[in-house]
Length: 481
Image 1 (cartoon, rainbow, N blue to C red):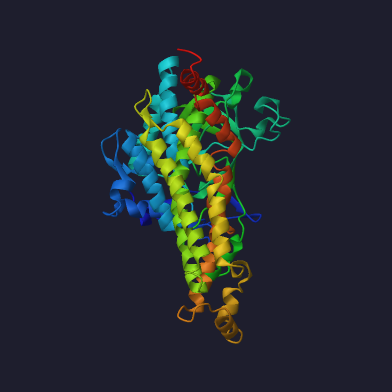
Image 2: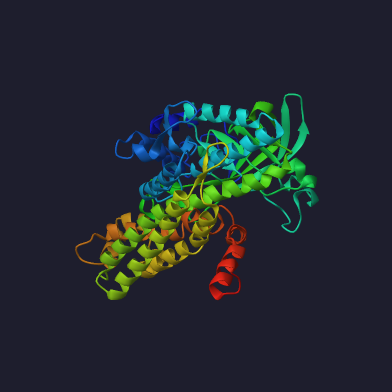
């Protein structure tokens, strides 16, 4: 397994084509807006070598028997699924940001089971090709970006009916040695932190949309791929050379619009090519795994936010107020409920035909449905406890100013024993998680990541056996024997 320093060095060898603010970025590793997200991924490497956390961050590969990073692992039992959620909570606690490897891990497990069934049913080589690819990823300990979300264009139209056919990523041509694809993937978490991209279809396709039923993997720096960096609230604070105003002074996350411009993919890197009947299973399983993930990562960030709110109450001199204690208890209750859902859907997991374990799909969707709601309430309560200073605080440069800094030091002090700078730092941290750059990976992502709230409600309706519940009621009511 790579360590954190080796991971960061490995990114320097990738020739990404990246645009930010209308300019090409040559050096992503040392760019002040991008580096915090790389630091967050590096934490997944660092903790894998820490004896205290190794059992969560590492696992034994079922492909080669070697010790590997859990983010490249195929789940072999319910314990693996549970440890995944525990690992994600730990990393959320350590980074208070998105650590960006979950999408790739969830993609591995979904693609593995579906390609096995495709190979079994259709006598194709997709599963062998995929496992060969994953074995290489495990041995190199690479980060893989899972890419599912297409721009989609007009939501009322199927992919093949769009005015612009490229609004869903599609197969343009099939060649002797591979395929050519064109399109884009939106909201791509950690695109610049990854070594490889694993592309999946974005929805269940039918026969007329067969060109959009495509799954493949390519190295991130492949010619024909362009990444356009996504804006985040308060993002340019990272370029001001200050620390307090950023809130989270070391870690962060990022998203990109990733464009595939007539990209060639060799056949041994193709895992689906027009087999539209299997797209629904792939999308549902990936979504299930990723909805399970939110019962871990969002809970870990929630732990940090709850701690920051408690500190803010202390620094404000309000910690002993009964309504403050009650709000903190409510935040903890909501956060632990999310964790309970993540653990529950994991403990009820079962093996697929390939041997890879799948979570309980109903409980995974219940988990994510709660995540679309509870972090918003946790954030609201944190903002309530922090007070208005969280969004009216002067800048760090004003605080450091030789003439006016003394006014900030004097008038923005809370309790006498707590330095003003510490109060400023915790206010900025709460702002970062609830409104700033970390809100992308906590608040807004809780709503839209792994599918919108309606997507989970559709799956809950499908997975819940309503007829069986009606049968139970008939028996109890004496309607049938």
